[in-house]
Length: 370
Image 1: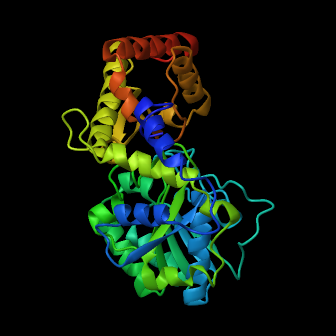
Image 2: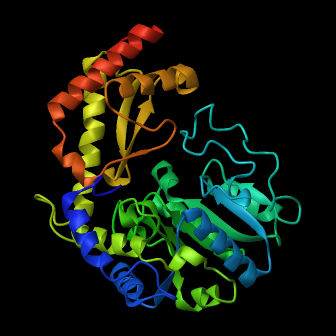
């Protein structure tokens, strides 16, 4: 959600679109209108519509294989739940130095990996490590996919160099902005920082909860979509596109003192993170845990300052349970999201609830205070 659950303005705007019907035999003027509004700053590009970002990333894999003749993949971050996206992967949302990050997961019953179709993990975000992977799998890699959330662990310059290195090695480059595109800004991190990836995946926030994801790239590359069979029965249904248009109608307008909804979302997420950190200080646990805005505040996450707590999954889950008991829902080992409806938060009451949760957590787990 990026606007809010059952938001009156969103519902009213969406209902206005719904009078046009919900299923057509092909793509419509509404799909075209949405792409024109989304890609106004990227002339010459087009998009392919999907329901989930896992589908869109799979489509990128297929386009990469068609262009390069290679099936191997270099990935960094969580890029979807299909076999080659998740097999033998790390706990990607953990901090780079977390001991919970390194253990490989999903090692059984997965297709699309192996000697002829290698899937390599770029773990530490060092260019030297990426160069070593490209050399080790030379001639077998066709695609590089990067989860935009991990951009918060490095710099735009490192990512620009990574994209350039992979393109020089003949790989198609894909920036997966499922979490970030349409949330931290209208198009996301790759566009804002000029990384120059061949394809960008955008999802989640586009339609305020309706299932929609897009694969965006140069028209010449996306022209292969039909030959590659990059579509499905419900790729053309209308409700998600109407929801995306309604979302765009709202976010393009000023929100409070902000020039648009995306700017306001960043302000809200930054304030939410600050409240969590202030509440941790109130409860005397700021040496253990705090919070930070991620990529400008469209997302935020808890930050574990204590090395022992960083690797203690049981205590971390107990903290989230304490927050839930106080009426605050957070994601564990994953950034959490804010929406425009969070403007209505009673910030003082929120801080009190968060402080109480921290205090109950320390009492139940024996965590030391500052």
